[in-house]
Image 1: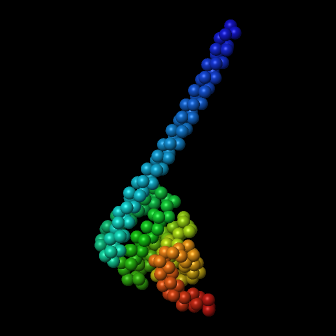
Image 2 (image 1 turned 180 degrees about the horizontal axis):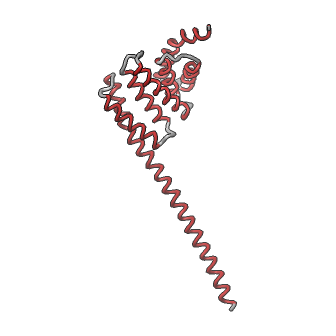
Image 3 (image 1 turned 30 degrees about the vertical axis):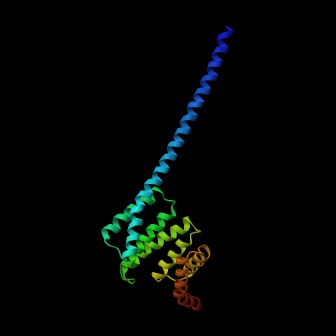
Length: 193
């Protein structure tokens, strides 16, 4: 009778080890599957963002949006990209740039331009929150607020951050100079009141 008890305890140890290794394998497989889904979502997000970036390159060369329907299609795709990777400052920045393009397509004082620029400001703000060390995002935030006639300490703060965070980016520094001169008269008015 002594032999079967030892035999049962050995089986129990082997069974416990087998169950432990199965559970470990399942946990590892689920972790790997989660990682693969995450990577696939980022890849799909980049694929969705590509047409918007290409359209903005074309618009830069032409100086205007070709087609409002195209703008809507690429903006919708960019929103999907942002949903798939909501922590990407790049997608927030691209959405801001898309709304800036829509605002630039109209006269600056129109309601249409003002509304689109407000959306651009919100996306640029998100980009600066997600990547606070990005001088390019700070200058676009300051530029949109200035073009929307929203002067004040936020613009000055954004200009300072762009200056400090992007000292070797010529395009950023040119905008800092232009916006600084443009904002000077308005910040002086604010300080005198």
